[in-house]
Length: 141
Image 1 (cartoon, rainbow, N blue to C red):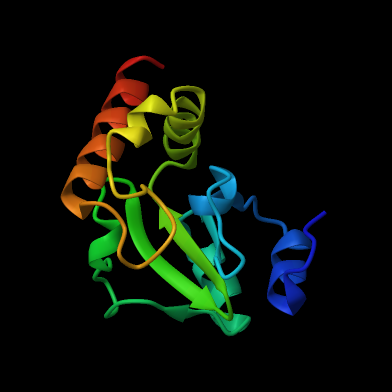
Image 2 (cartoon, rainbow, N blue to C red):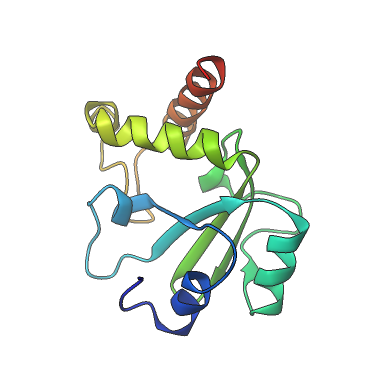
């Protein structure tokens, strides 16, 4: 069950798709004003569902916003305080994220805080870390 997410969160919770929590709330570094970040397997069905339920593309159509420049993110949509990353391979993203949770020292190397505000740590270093984790997961299936 998803708590305190309003109608958009309830909509995700009751959908047929699997939305995975990510970002500051997943890594337990959120502040009281943090948004809710999720990722989901990209598909035309997911895109239609999100569009039909008033989610909007963050960047220009087909262009991933700079804060999401990694090999897995196809696009990002939002509604209210929810951001959803549409990803190429949800299993790879999920396993990479679990590695980050299991080895938090990887995130600690990226100062200022890895998650938390629009003034986060270096985006290129963060994307590099995610991409290396994706490569590791993909090569060790």
